[in-house]
Image (cartoon, rainbow, N blue to C red; front, side, top):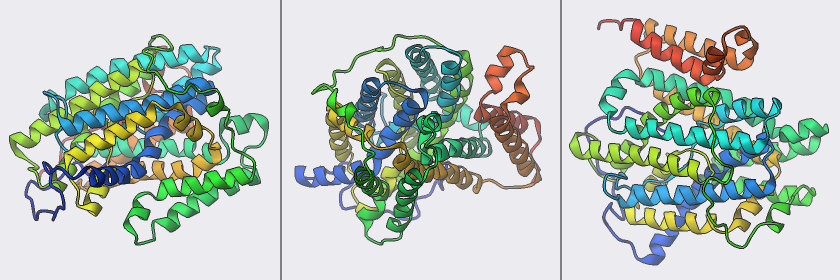
Length: 456
């Protein structure tokens, strides 16, 4: 995620080794794509893995969901880079599973499981909402100027900050060993804390090293080290690989299809915010590719990019995985390597699809203990919150803005911490406000409209 406000002027052009329309030789394109893959593969599979672990999805179904996360991300990356008709920005853009939706999905899904709903039915409802919400984002792509006026950087910054802060609980739960460890009494024992803290410490140390490729793949390297440590400690579980087929055949609507209003309301709001985040990320990629960051060509790229954001989330719901969005990570890789060729994006897409069709890859990822994953997700979730702060830093923080931030964060985090405050509300309102992100976001949106801006 990145800043939504960019100067319309190109202060200077980046000295690119390969420009947007350049075609690197196959070997060079492969290595450039592989560098992007090191930076994105963990964030692509992590949301699905966390949700499946939290809801108690079977290892076989988890394997399929993780595989489809890679395949769907590959299809979206292809559309963004290649640009097919109105679909895609025509830039080196990587798209992957979004962290923004983890909180509501785990929150509502866990409540449904606790109420006795079979996990397969819960997944059917989640994917039904993923499909329904995708139409919001596709619609938004056609009315972006109006939506941008309504949902300003102040509102977006608050929502992104709330997403990050409400996910911290999920991150800490993972560091302690996850919900399974809570049930068997091993939560936050010495072994789990050693594994999670080792990964966290390694990510910090690797980010201090000045070698470019090490910094850009610090999370993956730290997780591999944590994986090896877990192996020595006897915590790797390869049962997901043992039962996996040789090739994962995409199966539409494996769980069937259902719907949940409790989940749809917060998800609908997050789809809006994710659309606006995509504007910032696509603008940043455009700037790094020495392309316009205003005017009709830029707006065409934005519309095509956000349209793929929505269309690919529709595809994700049909093929049993979670909403996807434009990733900011690849902007750092473009800046570091000087390779902005959109043809490299097609190579990245091919690698993602190939890895997704090999279930053994998802099985190996699934074998990682949740404590190892927890050390990495704390950094990722913290980065989401930091992205929200970064957006808010572009806003004039006068008394009005600070009042809106204070009330929105207070209500959003308050509901997340004390959900019983909604106990006596009608069911419809409980459904709407049960997500801290939705509560804080709706408060920010309403206050931003009704409180007059200070005249300069």
